[in-house]
Amino acid sequence: MTDTEFKLTFGTETRSFTIPEDKLAGPLIAPRETQPLQGELSQIITGALADPVDRPPLREMAKGKKVGVVISDAFRAGLQREIMDGLLDEIVAGGPESVVVLCATGTHNPDVYAKSTGEWVEAARTRLGFDVQFEPHHSENSEFCDLGVSTRGTKLKINRKLLACDLRVYGHESKHHYLNGYSCMDKQIIPGVSSGETVRANHKWALHPDSGPGRTPWHGQPARRTNPFAEDACEARKACESHFLTPTGELVSRQVDTFGLDMVSSKDKIYWLRAGAPDRVCEEMVRVVDEMMEFRVKRSKYVVVSPGGPPASQALYGTQNCFDLALKGAVQKQGEALVIAPLEGRPDLPPDVSGIAPDARSKKLFWDNLVRLLPQPLEQARAEISDHFELYLWKTDRVLRLINGEQVAITLYATLNADVLGPGGFAVTDDIQAWIDERVQRNDGLFTVINDGNKLCVTSDD
Image 1 (spheres, rainbow, N blue to C red):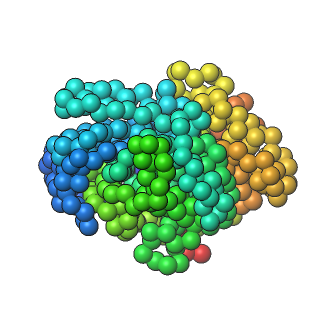
Image 2: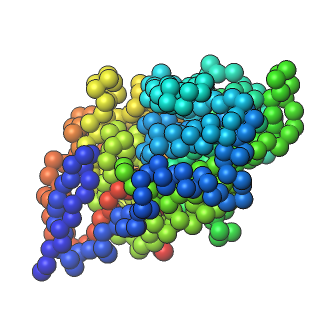
Image 3: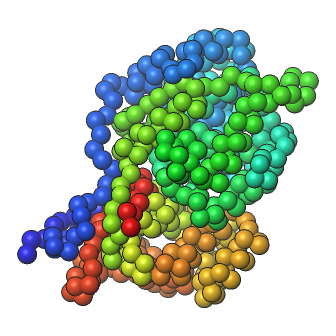
């Protein structure tokens, strides 16, 4: 019998193990190897900005305009600084009236999540000799304009600094998303620069069964366009782009100019990049991301999965994304999964938070509620979550659906021990190979192995 060796990401390291070939449901599932675009990163970005789809070059659009640039925070995987610098170079070269960079922190603490972006803006201001302003978005303390209510009942309250700009520019990094279907420019508005009230209303749609990976209104396949979470966010961006805040503080209905840049990259490579009309860019992004990172499989009894490296592997809160993106579509009901992630946390967090969540509030809402609701009947627990919904409870809901609904047993190979992880319904092992060998001996099912699960979308044919 031939054994197949695997090496999965474990934080910044790897972990190796073997599985007999005849026990495998298929080959390793991992992001497909794609030829990166050639050239220096800055040159690639500049080239895309000069040749946009359905838009003039960005520097032409920026002339004499009040420009708002929306950038994801530095904790998001991707080349956020390179995106921002490329956009600012082109905008300033066009001679704008003013420029403000908004860090799309959503509900995260801007003192933490926008700190690096603020430093990048300061460096750009010095380099360009232009007074680029910086807005570290705060979901509770920033000033907002009320744009009305979406068709799904979400009150649309958007950061005033962006609405005062007559050219809105989005800089973004894409992949599959466990709630929105795909991480796309719509998310730069909700949750990016929206009020906490707006984000909470939108994110309650995460409880809907059609909200999840592989579904978006931008999809080329009509059957995959239904996703209430994503449709609500898309509507919010459209509403934002049809309103303008005048210098006298009057909010008027007016279509403003927009420009977007989106990419798929790794630490030092760009695999796909498009700039221009945001809608057109989103449509192309979906096709590209599916080609690179979507996999259709037959569900198996056992799944071994790594979410990838940091930040996905730092805390269970982030690792949970791969439960929806990769594990759920690969594992049989009443199957078992081994999740390989260090969960080492951050040194600036309290010990009871580090490795579980990125901050104390998300730990309380996600983890503490998971521990409390796990013993309850599933429908009772889900009804309580719906009736008393707060942010991060969607993660609790999804873990409960997987463990108590699909009855999937999840074991973690991590730095946290069973005393910490056990109350949330997780087993712990310190020996990957032993866990696998025990299940091979049972001879009752096949294994699926997945690496970089937070970057994939695994769906089932059955």
